[in-house]
Length: 85
Image (cartoon, rainbow, N blue to C red; front, side, top):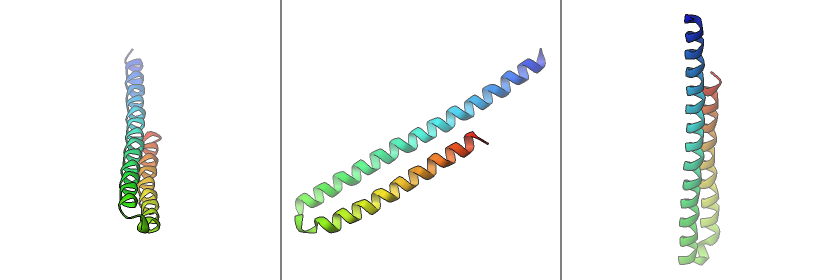
């Protein structure tokens, strides 16, 4: 009976770890989506105010979006590594 309880407790801890990793990965994806949306919003407002600076603003926006996406990818990888630990 006690070995069954120990096994169930171990499985519950493992499931909780998977759920935490999935929650963390979801938060990272949501955060990246919001961040890239704000970057795009700012870039469009900047281009609307100064159309002649559109090329510079666009290239800066792409670099910033890539950095945000890289951080989100790193967070998802860390969550997955914690899950398979």
